[in-house]
Length: 89
Image (cartoon, rainbow, N blue to C red; front, top):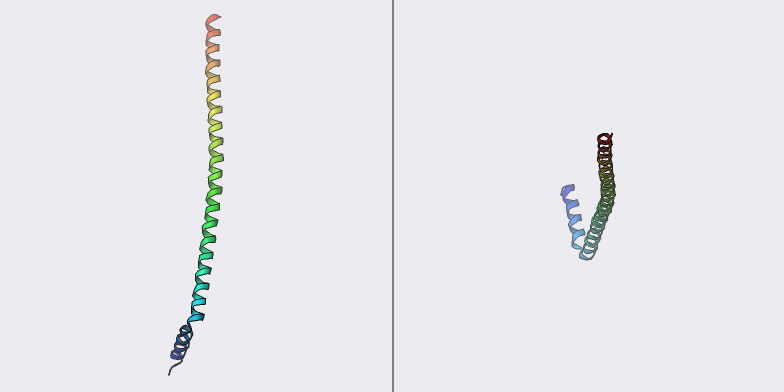
């Protein structure tokens, strides 16, 4: 019997021990679920952090747009006042 067949036979004997096999399967599933849950949680935290940064940037952009609009209105009013002063002079 070749060496490869002995190792295959040993593996088969190992698999026939159902109690140990079931425990190893449960352990394998548990570890896999743990890794999967950890990765999902890391992605969720990263997404939440990115969302918070996006909201902060959105608020900053809105504030800058309001400031730009106010400055534009002030410039328009200053232009009107200058025009009125020129007309009266």
